[in-house]
Length: 257
Length: 257
DNA sequence: CAGCTACGTTGCATGCATTGCAACACTCAT
DNA sequence: ATGAGTGTTGCAATGCATGCAACGTAGCTG
Image 1: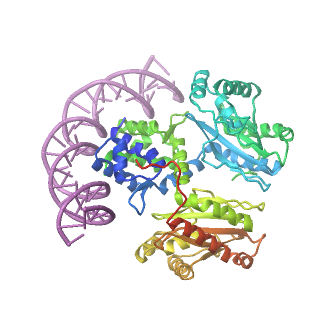
Image 2: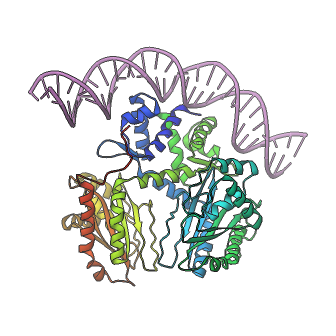
Image 3: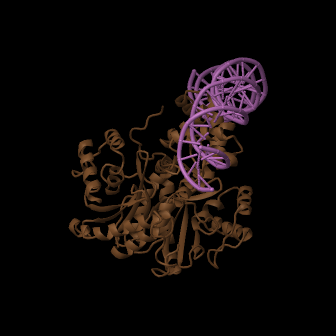
């Protein structure tokens, strides 16, 4: 691995904590100021860091543009999107699509509820991994060893009394999700919000993404939400089919986007 | 500037276009495969690139997390947010907050409309810079030279017949925005959507952000939307006051390193 | 105002870290 | 099997990143 690049990249998470001046960056990197300066300059040229008016550095706009572009190029996202909107049309609730990647789960698409309710989730935002229904499905599919390793390393914040409290409980949740092929989050993240989720699988049967429908208690009860499960699973299966190329776009020229 | 870092960072926009394998990356960088490999490995260790199952590389999840974190640490965003939600409570329409940074304008906050309407905008997504009301305000405040330079370099896509067609027209728009201290977008981006925007200023009077209210014709006419202008300006001024204020709300637990 | 400190910046010599090469390991078609 | 296409590793040479020291500047403080 490259030392120079390694140092340069270490600056990014450092700046993510908040703006910092040259001295602070140099100190935390353990290098001479002049070295830090040149690294920062290079990052700046690529738009990854920005120098604000008080001369301190913070992360730059290009970072957002990159993340945005990358997300829109995910093929699973492209394939899934029309299915998600169709599901939203059918039930009216918020629909999410999420993927797992090296210890993190993040939303890569979202279709907003037609009801006037706000949900605190955002595309690109890391998911509350210990409680979210989609996270359970994604982690449940990992090989035993990795699954346990991840579960051990996680923290288990008690967002609500119904949040998953610790690693054993979480692993049990995963086991259940794996057996039944779907998962729920009943008020584990936000007291009044329930979710039901289903996995999207690739050609080899491995879970490549997960999707969920979320709705607050005030609109539908948890039981009512569960009646949507068959529909959610059908949608997920349709995406799986298309993604794994088995059902190459069955609707002739109807839903090209 | 550092050659190694420069090369490594050049990989990111390259991968933003889509996944690529080692050979492609090496070619486009103009370096030996082994060199590209080591750069990619370093990027991988930092989570910026991800190696998908077919061994090709694409941008990694950490990028999203970084962008997200950076956005949430913008102090202007933190200060503005409660004002934005209050404005949304008052009028019910979609509220945006945007900043300018080295040639790009991007949304850094959004409060969704209470009406069942979907708008195609997303936090972190670059703004349609030639037509958006917030973009006009942000660019209008640049020094003459830079303003013209930027205007010349832009492309002017005709999203609708009312889109800004070219640089001179755009510069005229900016001039107008600067004089009147507010701006509009009347169907310039999407046929049926109108926006009205006002600037947020720092202590030195320079524009640091801009906010807007957007609503589709089907809900309120352009004229009706304009009646909200005083409210929008008052909100923007309130944010300006707090942002440039001598006693900004004390940040708990923030110590200088 | 002088003098101080703290910070960002630049030129330069040293030597380490990066580079390209060539050989190896592997997968997949033919 | 055999070959062409990948990704990967050890190694030697030197290009390049590094730390140093000196300079420039801004902001305090006496």
